[in-house]
Length: 324
Ligand code: ADP
Ligand code: F6P
Image (cartoon, rainbow, N blue to C red):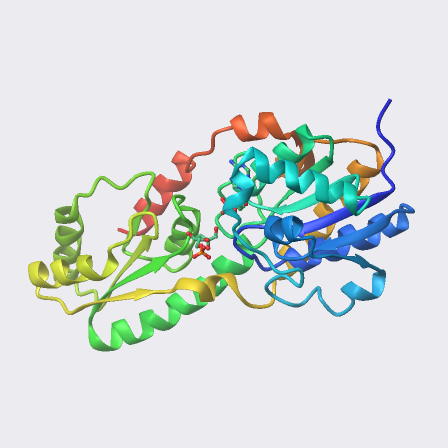
């Protein structure tokens, strides 16, 4: 028989992502509506280990849906990688009467959730990361806001690049994944899009491309470079030396993680948070919520973590053709 959950905890973990607050708000309000007590855990697994835990009511999440960041705070917690840390986390849940937890974060956070569930705490993961690098879902909370923020910033860099007839290398986040770079590359009409999954370290090809475009009369050359490749500043120096075209590197950095979430991030996060609350109410554990083929779905965490994700070949080829 499924374990009956009376008190649930909610935490945000890993890099913050716009829309996390909408997810927290939804977990809190849906769980209260399901007749449960809700405990907020501050600063992810770090706060769990420290017992930084407080009871939440509906009012605690008022006026938060439009805010970027996470009202609960977040952290990376190395102690949670160890069995001892995980056991301490499970004990802390028991101390506060928490029998189920919603973990909002990326796949690293899911591994922590998986460990907690093995120790008897019902856990549900909700995908919160700007990187879109979780295999079991086509959507992660924060990606939409991040790509819109980056796209607007890149438009601005393009204005000054055109005015000065410069080449600009703009580095976007994404850890080892190239989804932000791919989307911005297409949406910003970049001349070159460098993705860690595809890059063959052939700088000569980029140089040839710049020279060809100059001959065609293009006044700027925008290169979107993914963080997973990095080295934008040294790349800019080499490209300038080889092409004679003034080249600048812009690393967009943490601005991509901030700001008020888009409607899509608020909406999807709200539905996913509610689903997580309902899965716990049904006594489910070791599951993650996702969005696939136009539907909100859930998977076993073990299976979800085994899944692989790659840059869609067709979309990558279109991106290359459009940048010619
Ligand atoms: P994200 O959740 O965005 O992928 P991280 O990979 O940094 O971000 O993971 C966030 C936190 O999740 C880590 O700081 C750690 O506390 C926990 N975590 C990550 N990997 C594991 C693991 N293998 N086992 C247990 N906990 C983990
Ligand atoms: O996972 C989100 C992300 O912003 C990645 O794109 C980036 O690689 C990483 O977090 C940066 O992490 P930190 O905040 O620890 O510097």
